[in-house]
Amino acid sequence: MVMPGSTRRRELWVGIVAVGLVLLVAGGCAVVMLINLETGSERASTNLELPDEWRSVHGVRDVTAVDESRRIPGDNFGEADRWEHSVRVEVTLADDLSGAEAAAAGRDVLRLLEPEIARLVPETPADRISTAFTVGSTECSVGASGRGPLEAVGDALADAVALREAGATTVSLSASQAQTGGPGKADVRAPKDVLAQVATVARHRQRPVDLLGDEAWYRSNELPDPVAVKLVVDVSVRPSVTTAQLSAPYSPLTVLLEAAEGDRVLDDVSRWLTAYDGYPGRSGQPLAYVVQGTHGGMVEGWVGGVRGP
Image 1: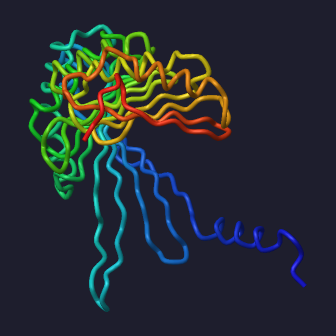
Image 2 (image 1 turned 30 degrees about the horizontal axis):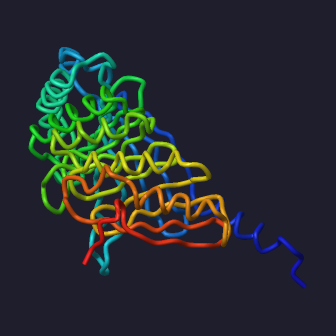
């Protein structure tokens, strides 16, 4: 007979004995090694000792680099095991930098770090080196992978600072898109009263963004349309609205209300959208909408009464 919970406890004990944790100190570097006692595979994490030249870069507050490696057993009999390396770099910039200063700091510190990392961990391929920039204590971060163009990193940092200055409370973006090499999309949170302003800055800087401001949510893989963002914000403050979101340019505007089938508020919001005179925006394309109640009921139509094909 198997007592209730005995299987879970047995799995827990297996998990405990299967993994060992070893902390080594060698040459001034802390090395944390995880060893799977069943398979013999290993993972190691080593803090790299970087020279102090990075301290001379204006605006750079801190730099850490970690070599995260794992031993891969040989596939065939007699084949030697190999270690696979990846390096994670974290750079903290001062909070009071302008966009231009943040861009310069990012480019300059990478120029110093890249040859040092190549010297310390020559086995690491370029596409397994990642760098994360954080601007001060605010949630403003930029990620870069590989030894990509320094200009892309600088542009991303300048854009992140500009979006923050426009009112964003959180900015997170990649320097470039892996598939196209174009600017990476930014995930931005901001009070909804400045969301259209943030979209304007993003469009001016040619940076795709996803925007979230309380009940208002705008997503697009293209450059943002501030007029469409304003529409999302405007409808989000209507009575009983819990969420307004637009995934541009192909999906309809979706508005969710605290309502049920037959409630008057569904028709009220639908009429308001049909009468809305601030759309279409830059795209010039008609925009469909769907108004839904959380407890049932749905009304469809076209924003501004401009019907599509």
